[in-house]
Image (tube, rainbow, N blue to C red; front, side):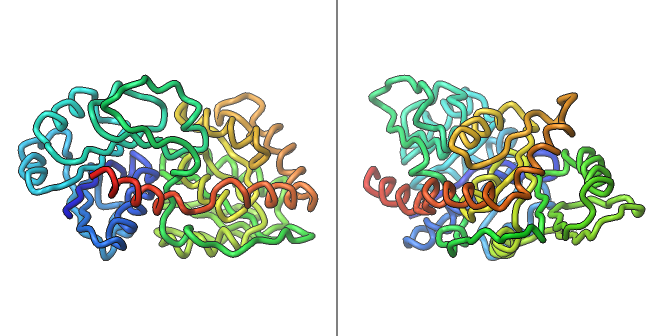
Amino acid sequence: MKILILTEGGKNKGLGHIARCTALYQIFGEKGANPELIINGDNTLLYLLKDKNYQIFNWLKEKQRLFKIIAEADSIVIDSYLAPKSFYNKISQVFSGQLIMLDDLNRLKYPRGIVINPSIYGDTLNYPQNDEIIYLLGRDYIILRKPFWSVPRKQARKRVKNILIAFGGTEQNGFLNKLLEYLSKNYPDFNYHLVASNFYPKPDLCLKLNLYSKLSAEEIKRLMSKCDFCISAGGQTLYELVRTSTPTIAVCFAQNQSIGLEFFKRKGLIEDVGWVSANDIWRRLARSFGKLLLYKTRNRMIKNNTIIIDGKGPRRLCKILKGTK
């Protein structure tokens, strides 16, 4: 069974779509299918595609090339914030196989097929009733990469020693410099582990700073498990942090992150400091940082995290999608 997975990502688009689409690639391959990733992106994401079958080109513009590939497929997965409604409609018209569409915000009126919202809040959005669409919504269908399907139970340490900083794409690098300066002045006594690509911190920082780039999913899981808490954005990385029961201070960088952050905050899984552009961002950060230095706060978050995301989303999806072929 040939499955095409269309998505986007790279230096300027972030890597959240790539992360969850590689997770689908892994489960499809495990179940005997023949998946292929078709990515609208650039070479900055090649380290995430090791040992995978993929092509990188702008499939929104190079439609003739795309349609030749589609002709050989049995199923198509589309995970995109960029594709317009007309693109989905065209695919639906020319493709007779199974069309699977990932959505985070009830973004479009989708054509016939399967709509998956793999988020903590997916089943609360008001999707339109449509007999031609199967909806798979909410936390049971959260898509994580293979190393996160099974994780060891985490224990809160009495004292904080290691702090992770992970924001995803390079568009956060301006804030990263400000954050590191702030931590250097106010919280210099911890071991910081910064995951960032194409980022060069200022040399005069008074921090014990370890830099990481282009980590595999297994490597980032081990780093999350090692650290006592994390400062992160509100994208796909946040789901991996919750899965590893890593207490997190979350900063909102985009509108499509805000609804997820609100749900995570409501369930006691994160400290949400709000928008990165807020005038009181540093006051909020200081308050949340102080809370997470407390053992009781981190221990409560870890206990809450263990019951929210079970890592079985890809297997549930694979079983259901196979049944709807």
